[in-house]
Image 1 (cartoon, rainbow, N blue to C red):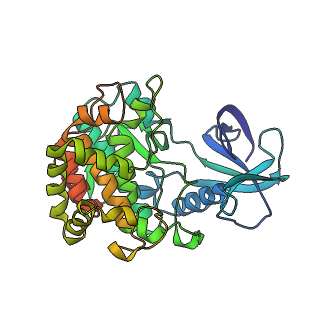
Image 2 (image 1 turned 90 degrees about the vertical axis):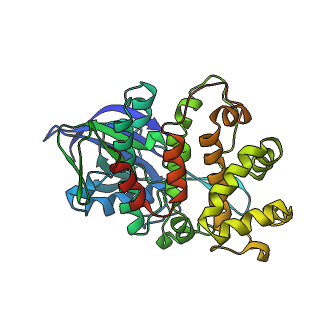
Image 3 (image 1 turned 60 degrees about the vertical axis):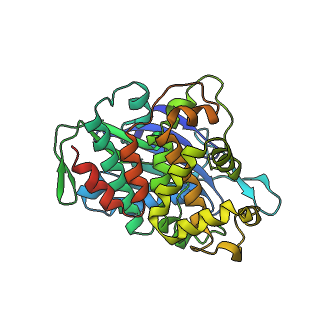
Length: 364
C-alpha cells in the first residue's frame, strides 16, 4: 500500500501504531508495526495474534465483519525509524523481561474504526439508556462471532472498542438495530486460541466461562475507564483476589448474603464453591491458580474460580456501588453504566450471550 502517515496513535511495549491514508483511494487505515524474530508465524509475539484474528475477520461477510477490525494486507520489512528494533518478551523461566535485537518488522494494515468508546463515555456522549443498550448488544455480538470460532479476545476494555456515527440500520443476526453509532472490537494482541498452544493460557476454559463477557462487564459496565481517569487512582490488580472476597464477607454481611443467594441460583458448582469458601478450605487451592487442586475440581483447570471471584466483584458493585467504590479506595460517585437489574441478568445468564443480547434488544 502506498500511504501517507497522518499521525502516531500509540507506541506500546513492542508495537507502534499509526493512522495512515491510502494515497490512491484516500481511505484511512491503521498501520501497526512490530519487531519479529524470523519470518514464521509465532503466536508468542502479540502482533502475530493481531495478524491472525484480523485475517479471520477479513474473511467474514460484511454483516459480521463490520463489528471487528479486519486485515488489509501485511508485509515483513526491515525495521526503520517508524518501529522498535527490540523484540521484548516475558521469560517465564526467569520471570524477567528479555529482549532480542532484530531488523525484521511485521507491518499490518488494518481497518480504521474511528474513535474509542473511552472517548465517547468520558465526553458523556453516550447518554441515553437506549444507546447504552445498543452498544452492549453490538459488543456482545462481536464477542460471540469470535467465540464461535474459538477466539477469546481477553482485553475487552473501552479503548479496544471503537465507534463511528451511522444513519443506517444495523443487522444483528435476524434482528435490526437503530443506533446512532456502529461499534467495533479492535486490538487482538492478548487473544487466546487453542491453536496458539500457549502454556497456562487455558483458551477453551476461558471460552467456557465466557471470560470476555466478564471482562467487558468489569471494564465497561463498571466504568473502570472513568475511574482510571481520576487523579491518583489506587493501584489495584485487575483480577479480583481472595482478600477482596474475605473483606466483603467479613465487613458487608448483608451484601455477601445477597450475592451468595444470587449466584447459588446458577447451580451446584456455585453452591459447592460457597460451601468450601465458608469452611476456609479455599485458601489451599488459591496459593497457585495454575495448579489443579482436588478440593474443588469443578471446571477445567479450576477456571470457574476465576469466574466466580469476578462475578462476586461485579455483583458487589451492582448491589452497593457506594461501598464498592469505598472498598476499592475510589474517591468518586461515578455510577455503573446500567442498572443493578441489568447487571444481575448478565451475571445469571453469563454463559448464554445470545440470551443476554435478546434481553437488551427487548428493552430498546
